[in-house]
Structure formats: C-alpha cells, structure tokens
Length: 314
Image (cartoon, rainbow, N blue to C red):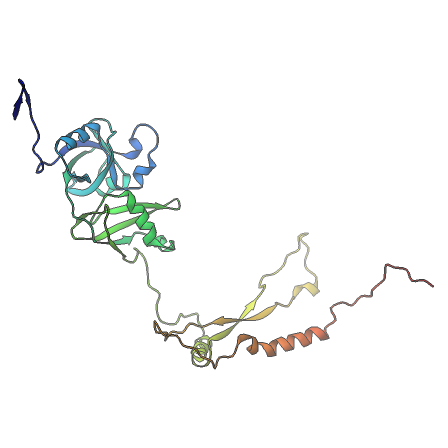
C-alpha cells in the first residue's frame, strides 16, 4: 500500500498469483450472435470481459493458458482463450472439449491460469481409418493445430478437413502430460487408426499358384507379367423387350493381353540395379502383334461395292 497526495493506491503483487474463477459452461452453439464455426475448429475458449480485467491486474504471463476442471466428474483439460466477449458468469467451449470433460450445458467449470512447458513431441491416434485417405496427414494436422494453444495427454481433439471432422486421441506429449504448442518445434508421430488391420504377408486364397510362380520367374529373369483383360463380360438386352436373335446370342468377348509390372521384393534402399537381360515389352509382344496384323490383312473389312458420284463420259 502506497500513499500519494492524500489518496491510497494498491498495486497488485507481480507474479506468483494465479487467476481462478468458476463459470457456467456452454457449447459454442449457444453463443449469442452469428454462428462461430471458427471456435469449433480449435482448442480455445471464450470468457467474459471481467476475466480479462482480472488477468491484467494479476500480470498473468502470456500466452494465457488455462486448466479446465470438472470437479463433479474429476476430469481436467487445458485450453487457450480466443476472446473475452461472453456474458458475465458464462464461458463457451468447443463441443469436443465439453465431451472430453463430460460436461452438459450449464454445468459448473473451474478455470485457473497455468504455465505449461513448450512441446517437443506428441503422438496421435486417429479414431477412424478414414484419416488414411488424407494425402499428407502431417501437413493437415499442422495446419489444424494453429488454432490450438495447448495439448493434454488423453484428450480427443477434433480437426476439420474437406468438410469432414476427424477425431484424434492425444496418446503422448513431451516434456509433460500437458504442453504448450505456441511457437514450438514439435515432432509428430501417428499410431495406427482404431480398427486398422495390417495386410497379411501371406498369399491371398484367391491368388492362383501359377500367378505366384510367374511372379518369382519374373523376378529371376524379367520384371513383367502378362494379364488377360476381357473388355466386356456382360450381356446385352434389347430396348424393345424382344428376345435377341440367335446370331446375337453368343457374341465373342474381346480379350487382349496387357503387360504389368512386378515389384522387386528384394529391393534395397539406396541401391540402383540395371538388369540389361530384360527384353523390352515391345519385343515380347512382337510375335502376337505380327499374328494379329496377318489376321487383319486376311479379313476383308468391307464386302460391299463402290460407286462413283461423278458420271463417266461415254
């Protein structure tokens, strides 16, 4: 307490004092005004203006991070703050955060300021195999985490990509169970998604022995197998409902042989192997091409007679 010119002024103690308050919590969808989809995308909450006034007087260090406690269910999490525009006595959370804390609309939530270590490592496990369809999951996650301030081990966060919401469980964080991810260099790893089954190394039951043997022969002497492709396997139906003529019942199915590559299962990383004993594909199919060309030349493509539009002079 200090005395200046006949009036008293009290200066708050610097450092060592934490902010703590109790609010009724609601999901972002209950926030008055326009829809705030940006809040649902991240890990930050909306608090009342009085909270900002208290935090300023307490000299709470930046970035402002908070511990969220649901004392009734003994659940805790951590979050940053996005804005101070909530009604007094209320705070608004993303729906996925309320789900983690087992909160219902209007439940009591304790919020206190904390200081968290800067993250160096985190490990995530997607809750759906649909996450594997993303071409570059690390880049997608990195972009989504820009809307987060911290991570808590055991939380299930939700990120949105291509109009689809993906849930990921935070399996591990270092150097602590709760870390700050603001301006940090963090290594990220992914665990196999829930429900994901690795493909068996054994030969599938539907694969024939000749195909498997062909693969081994190709690896020994070449790198190409031939695959027969039928261009049309179905049957035709007349539009007028009548039965097809006998001449149309058995139409020959066109088949053509396509070469396909066989992977080198003995490939060693960093080693390039040039096998000059392999013949080009064009040479292998030259015999078949010659036979086809001879058959085409013998077959008459046109059986009619031609007429000239120009009259000949007699």
